[in-house]
Image (tube, rainbow, N blue to C red; front, side, top):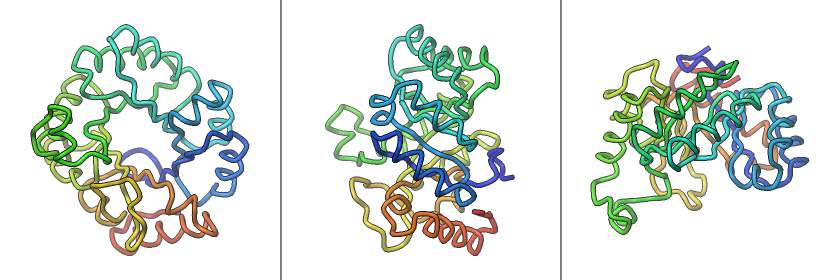
Length: 242
């Protein structure tokens, strides 16, 4: 069990609209990963019943839905998703303190209570993209600002690029949770990600959970790819991935 409370830090991203494909992939990865991540595409296609199918597999589920709306609307959405048994859900930190507090309070009314974390800056955005949307700060400064705001708002952690995990960990010591997408084993295709590191580098910088998609899901043998990443982590950091 690592500092996050999860036995294995590798959460695989089930980025498909097909519930049958997601379930089959997840079943093939049982014992090789620590959790499952589902996102907007999957939930839009399958709704609550699809989420229940993934939760019923028995691994912790991260519902990556990135809620961002007025506080009352977000609170209602959090309550409904939490009832489905997910272990982690997220909101956008840029929604502000009142919205994040509403999300945390809503989650606390469900049992078991999921962890609520906040997205800081999407890993597909670099400094130029932030400038385009009026957030002219360096990504690290923006991530730092939003992580501190999420912590002050009572959330359990944040989602940030592994390149910002180190500054977030200094600002927000454990048990504050750091979840990092944009993790790619050495030599892997970066696809649409911009701010990435290897799994071992992300863990060394203070990450608790690594969300990994295509390097596992598009591998000829996804379970073997997941185990190889776990072995890389064990060799580099002593954190088991099995």
